[in-house]
Image 1 (tube, rainbow, N blue to C red):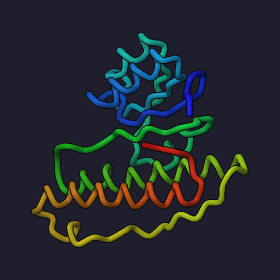
Image 2 (spheres, rainbow, N blue to C red):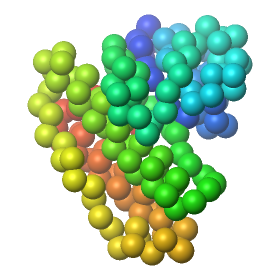
Image 3 (cartoon, rainbow, N blue to C red):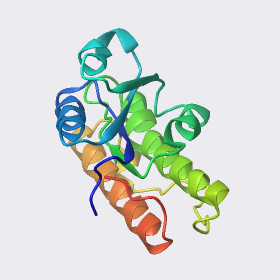
Image 4 (spheres, rainbow, N blue to C red):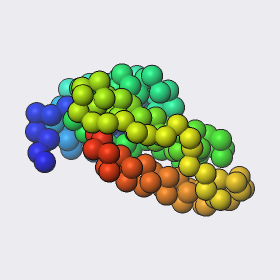
Length: 159
């Protein structure tokens, strides 16, 4: 699938990986919308004519607005520091919000069924708040499960 002249959303676009991705996509002729918690950190994106939308993956309504009109969502936002609660809010619940927002956008457009569960996936790793590497590994498992579920139900592609 070519993305030239298509609208995409990049979460985490003010970070190292998300920023590089947003710049590369824009250089390749993709219309990029970048989600930024702190719009001051996104000046380098604006300089490349990238649309910057202030918001956070932990805000479900902000995510619904951010995905509107997007063909693909690149979900690169992540919490790398801080507490277990912060990791879970951004890496797990934030990912869930991204998937739900994409599903909602497609449902409004009449392009796909929406069958995402509102119930969190519980893993043993999340029960041990002191094991940060296990939490990170658990986050990846949840993200993969959500990606698999989204793909099975014909939802908006995201990475």
